[in-house]
Length: 193
Figure 1 (cartoon, rainbow, N blue to C red):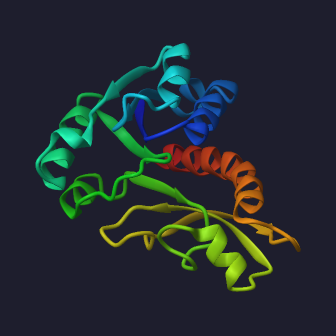
Figure 2: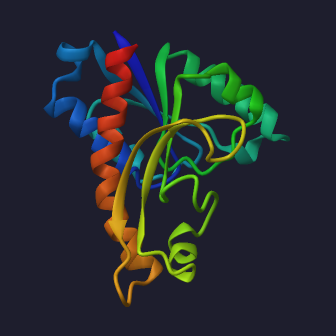
C-alpha cells in the first residue's frame, strides 16, 4: 500500500478534498494508496477534527517547542517516517521547510500554491495579482524543492480576476479550483509510484 501523509496548519480544506477523493474514487483498490496520517504544527488546526472523524491517524508537533527550524524538521521527518510515506502532501502547512527536509522527500513532496506559478511566489498572492492588473489568477500544484514555490509544476487551474475583486473574493474562487486540482494531482502521482 502506498501511504500518503498530509501536513496541515489550519482548517485543512485541501486535505479534506484529497481524503474525500480517495474515498469516493476508491484509491485503495484502484491505486493501492491511502491517506494514513494528517500531521499539524498547531494543536488547534481545525482539519485535525475532520481527519479523526474519517478514522485517519492524527499527530501534532508544535514548532514552537524547538530551538531551530532544523530541529523541528528533523523531529517532523521522524514522525512522518513512522507512517512509511510514499508521498508527503503539504496542504496549508505554513512552515518553510529546510533543504535537508526537502531533500529527504525529494520527488515525493508536493505543495499547492494560490497563484499561477512562476508568478507571485510567497505570500499575499491574490492582492498582488489584483494590484498588478492581472486578468487571470489561479492555483498551482508543484513538487517541492529547496527554493520556495519553484519546483516542477504538476497541475494548474486558471481563475478570472473580475472587476471589483478583492483579495478575499478572488481567494474564494481560487479555493474552489484548489479542491479540484489537488486531489487530481495527488491521484496522478500515486498512480505513477
